[in-house]
Image (cartoon, rainbow, N blue to C red; front, side, top):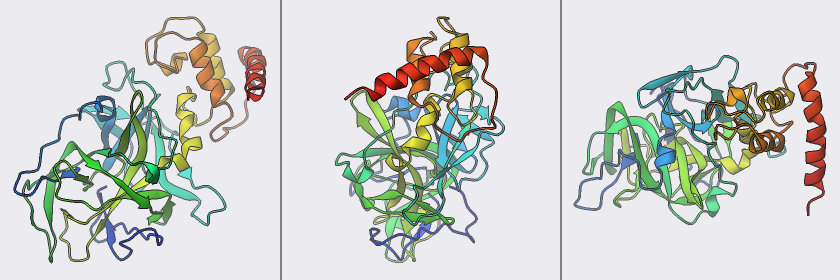
Length: 363
């Protein structure tokens, strides 16, 4: 999250946040700690088992983003820019009209919008993102996770590998110029709703940054990066990096022991994010036009990962799995301007009715 230092991001946290008086500064590349008396490990290559998650992190505007699949990238809304998303030197261009800012649940006294947004990018077949499956999302609350998570961001690089004074009585590490993808290990503490630029976020805070080898804390440019956990079939995305708590006496461009990283809890926003699996047209809504794409290419072998030809699951064959992906999310998202269904769609509406009837009949 790169911001003008005269206008810092402030996390106005509810009582669940222990460091209420702390500033929430821009989050940069992940700063990594070492054990006492040892240098901090580099951690600029994918951690074992998290290669798929690592491949999805890129630079978006002044921060980071996570590629979810079907061209969609999830990031923090306060990250400026977004016209392009760059991964491993490959720049992807945003598709016009595809930006969607997510909303908070009603009835909780929160702002209408939250600090999360989805953008869709063109992903040609020579892109490193081409053919990646839909990213699995964690569907349980982050605060309930008792195991370590992994944060990955594309922020500014760490410039000290042994602890130094970072202002006042604080000790930690400095970071500076040059974006770099890095990762660190974090543990979840408790729930912590917070405010970023007048957008409330349902979230969680990490335990305090400690001098333990491999432990991570976010830094400038990491906003929009991902918080991952290991699931049964590989890494799952549980949160997005938004901010860090800072000690009032802490210097700029530093991470001090005791800082905490603040994440959104994506389980609170799943209904808005899950459309990426079935939205083949990229209009932010799963509906008749997406069904059309599947039917028009039914049974055909297509270029794997080409959702514009109906291949929702990326296996290169348009069939039942792709139809199920669309039907599972049918009607989700923001409804575009009304349109007259094509004949192919009318045929599939019968399929939809039968499918929904079958689901409602299940126990």
